[in-house]
Length: 236
Image (cartoon, rainbow, N blue to C red; front, side, top):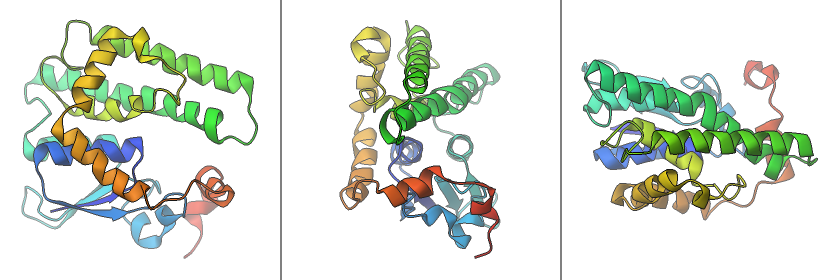
């Protein structure tokens, strides 16, 4: 059983995409990030960056004590190795998938995240910051579009953890001020993944939580965007 600590954000969706595709038994523990659930002591015990998603694998492959994993990219690699699915075992194939997973973790996710922040959440609309991150998101869409030319998926003909990592960060393309029609290869890839039954199921799990969530309040924004070292060093 995989105990999944989750909220329906792009990083959270990465993990439900994998779990639904692989058919693993899992249980969701909601971590309402705008309510500060990520700072609860029991969560910080195994997610020291006070970010979701995180997992506890109660039936690890070595038969030992439960294994705890934080960071969405690390979780995808762990689950890929655990199941033997969506992560090549040959050295060259694994290298390529890992490259593109790291590309998402270090590029597409952070840049699109800043795009969301300055375009949607920031109390002051700073034209320079908005333009900077909209343009960088656009550049990264172009990188992905070029990689997908002549390929069904990011690393070739097989769906992988690289696709699961990147797809949720393209879902909010309109919020990111992008136009999928400008990226023919990316658009084709996007709709291919969108139509997968496991994708539909994964997003339905998130929608069930979203329906019970009010819009982010000003207090919630303070929790989300006002964190300092004191947030994780304070005694609870």
